[in-house]
Amino acid sequence: MRQGTAIPIYRVQKSVMIQKATSKDAQTIAYFLFMAMEEIVYQFIGKKDKEMALKFLNHFTVKSDNQYSWQNCFIGKIDDEIITVANVYDGADLLRLRQQVIDFVKTNFNSKFNPESETQSGEMYLDCFAVSPNHRGQGFGSKLLTFLVEEFAGKQKQVLGLLVEKENFNAKKLYQKMGFTYVSDQKLMGKALE
Image (cartoon, rainbow, N blue to C red):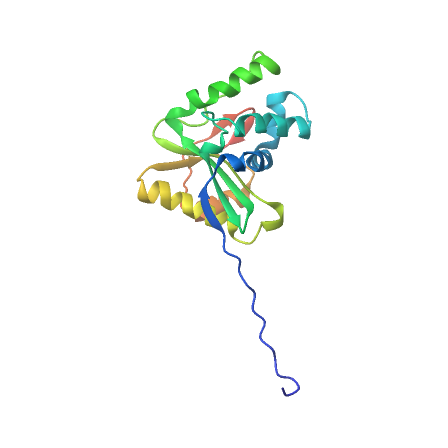
């Protein structure tokens, strides 16, 4: 090799495999849901306690037929590591799916708990979405979102809806890039959302 000749360097882009979650993924899903909704879970349990919040979410992710169940989640994996999670369910099922959560919160934390409805019939609702801190900024979240848009809006011809904090400009920019459009303002647990 001659002096000054550049050696090409190739960056290997790891491929993410997207699939429906299984019951074995439930505990990991609880951690990702916590990343997506930390402040809201603290409101559910009435205190800022990460360990209690994770136990609260895990209580639901391992069970079936509730809004945070592993059954309503899609995961993105590299090798055997979950790096991104999305919690999606039919908005028409919100009240039924949420009932376990409401009953649990009322019994254990806040007898007056009565959250606003965040979705409605006629849309598949992307309730929570999170990417592992070690894998952010690498396009893996976009790949999962693209999959969800193609699956629900493309193949199934359904509306895919979500809520985003008004001040979360980076997330709003990503969602707009993925084809989401503003519909209306919404309040949920005291947060101003779009």
